[in-house]
Length: 268
Length: 323
Image 1 (cartoon, chains in turn green, yellow):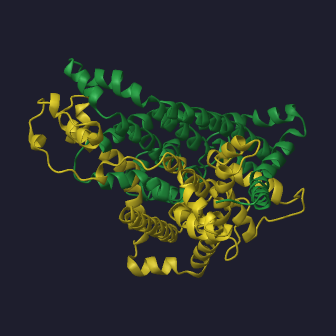
Image 2 (cartoon, rainbow over the protein chains, first blue to last red):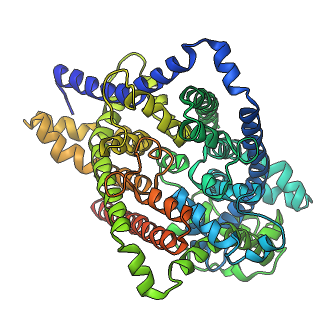
Image 3 (cartoon, rainbow over the protein chains, first blue to last red):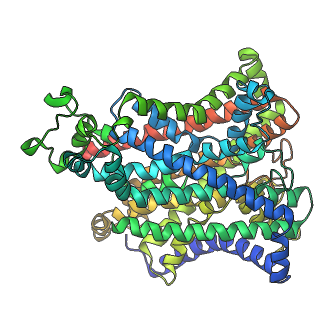
């Protein structure tokens, strides 16, 4: 389509203007408001006991979610790609389900299953608290991050086929040796990309986690819950900005990793 | 959601199901007898090779056996299916009438209406401006284009609550530019536009890169105006991608919570969206209402995604027929 210079320029102005108003200006304003009182103020705000414990809890949830998702994600991807069984299409759909479910609905569903009056309420009554405890927050996080590893590893598995694995087993490698030496190295970038997405979402999840958390500062608040409670409950607008900026910094690192990995992956 | 658009950027994901293969003579061969030599599937038949290998390869055999599949199924059930099943049962705890009553309660209905209305506006704006942004990123050249291209993914990387705070710092109380959108529907629209920005852009971009520009040149040399070329040549090519991006944005918007919770104001019948209504019902201990509206919200999302799938498979079939 040949577009006149004038049209092209005005389209460019509209597109960039839209992105500017929607993304750049708000982010600029929050950065300015965070760092305007000085760097020391920012550091003081993100190193209060409540903030530290929120960061620790967020990291703990990530530390549990990631290995679980790696193990089960790779297993699910292998089953979906290499397995031939009835109901495979159904399994495919189930893997995508978390993308279609609202975070709040995830929270309500978990309450209906694990809450005191839920199907597994006996657990709660026996003293193992899932909802309003850390297990519930972990379950919520695993629910929303479940598709990432599977969906990043799956296409790679398709692509590499099985010739090398077959060669390895012809040469006498057992199942584990083949997996560690052939399959895992082949899927490592896809897997890493999936892990990065999982970490980003796990740190940033809000809706599903707030539904199943008791939300006590210093006990059951993640970083995102801290941002919310500082703004709503404490009317500590500056504290909310500072905590949000911290999360934004983490998100930027993630974005950078994503871009780098994307290049690495397409080089392969 | 990132991986979804990502898949589109990298083109269609290879799907072994796509071409059903005829049963192979060796399909029933016992384990351990591997096809070899000339029998090996040629490269083009990778999916057939994979299917067959699945039966005969030795690597991680457990995962192809019922045990591995059983574990995976059990895992997905406990994490995803059982909670959703419990939710559905809870929604129909007092029968169909109870469900209907909960969903059609004035406040519930109002929140669903606000959700769908605002999401539809957001989807529409995305369809137009997302396509425009994609066009500029593909067909235009300017300094800093790579940077702008990377920034598009920011809303996916940014936690939703941060999106809320970020927009509030500009459009909230004490707005430095004097535009206060908090507790208005426009506030909801802006918040949702922020979080859904990448969908249309990332689904249109790859199609635009692949699009055959010679056809456009031909149309132009035959005397078509820019507008006609766009309407008759470019738009039909981009149509399915725009539609799928718009649908995904809509599905995301109706369930969104974190980005609207602070800027929306949660005013019943005005700016309270369905997710906020659900959260409120849990807080005041009305689990049936919460579950029922949750199921309604899920149903809207599923119908949207189902329609998308139907439309995209139909347009794909048409493409194959034309080819």
